[in-house]
Length: 292
Image 1 (cartoon, helix red, strand yellow):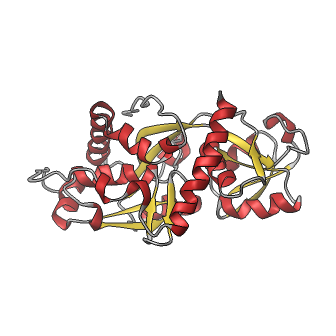
Image 2: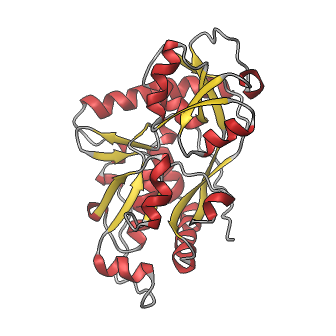
């Protein structure tokens, strides 16, 4: 079942990538599917929600190189994916249309600095919630649960079946990511780069035996390089994706959590999934919000 799912991911996400490169249209995440923007919303004075609503704009950090979740469309010059749709849902409930969202590329290493320095208002970027990060930023969510896995060369020439097979060997991941730390904790030698796409050439050349991060990201990378790679399909972690925001901004965190729970209930979360990652993956059950 799971293997069949990845085959579907590879085939359909490849089609998604081709659409992004050649159609000249915004794909499945276009304005026709834009969430309804709340009107005449009122927020308590001094809150982040009131400030953003009054400004009429929001800056959101997201990935630009992760098919299905956050991928820059070179034709429209707008990012597309599930993370992007989640960002639009939050903006809409603040009374901000998607036209007034400034998207800023967030890589794994700059997400906390972006939030701490006020360069973004929120980060929605396949961002795993963990206690270390909670020391410097706050998290709303989770809004999706992924799992870390391994990407290997097609045909799996080294016979890698799981994390235990790469202990003591070199695996590529991204600097500052949870995936990097998980590998180190397991005794894996890590080659760290700034983006996951930059891990592919070391895998091709044999400088590493695998690339490791969340399974949905690996599936997207495989889909863009048909016939070159495959996912081992043996996740060894649970990765709750959250929305990063300024530390101890409890009112804003509660607001986003309320937006997420409402989207779970009214179907807009599922609709956002089905327009993006759900074009190739089955629709999961919404996770339980962690209101810490």
